[in-house]
Length: 167
Length: 167
Image 1 (cartoon, rainbow over the protein chains, first blue to last red):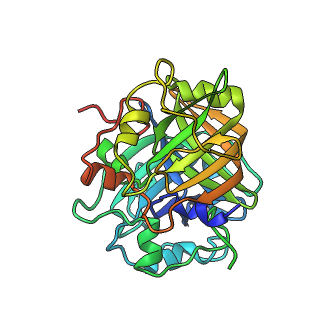
Image 2 (cartoon, each protein chain N blue to C red):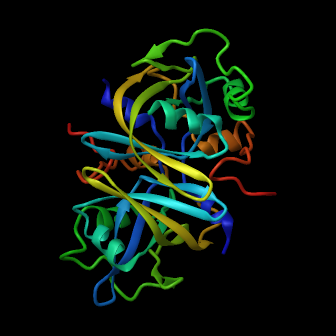
Image 3 (tube, rainbow over the protein chains, first blue to last red):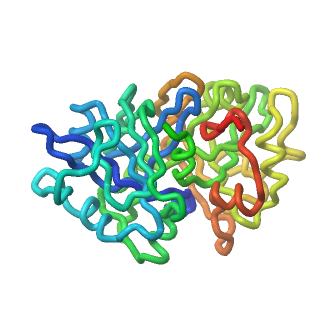
């Protein structure tokens, strides 16, 4: 078995946001997100059990998929992807809201969801969300693909990512 | 709500294969596939209830994700994506097998899975598969993204696709 074959699957790069208790906005970086049905529209995301965002989505029953673009500031990935919302503030100030969920400044689209089902695996929860709102925030920028993140931004996978391969 | 925001999610293009009863190889085109966990490696695919491949995966408990590349023959998509395996043969001759599953000629990687869980939605089943085998079949070709399929190959979504938008 060649684990590198799994790197041939294609993804985008997303900041998945939700609410922590006390009305504190938080989120994490995910690449494993996909539309599951078109009518009604549903989206599934895979979030590591260890990610604070996992328990925030589980408790609030809501999440937003913020789509990063090729021109999005890579600092968003450092901020949301490489430290925990358990002990850090991911949003510097009061975020803009869409459908009551925190929007990441610099995202090119935001898709808001209500959790309608979940599937557990050894290390990750797949949350299935019914889409409650969807807006394009930047019409011109291209969505950042995970391949672009690796090749152009030279980014790495954090160890909680579904696609992490120990080097 | 702007449904086009959902087109900002990024995907690859895959031929998902399985076995029909009587040992007949079949498959369909999917773009909604993603890795869910890294250790053990698991992959989720979303397959429309109306796709013959759905019932074949459900009955056999096995599927393979064949990753198409930018240089893969677009006829693969016509063959696997725009007619049903219920009344047509998707494989012209005996396919090569990986881990007992049918490999699509021209795929750049093949990931074989055993179904370990499933989640139902209104129109699609999300099958969660534990990866039982993974091989790279073409080291040089780039994975075909769904964006590449639309922009370069000028392909359309069949109406069973999770990402279908009526025009």
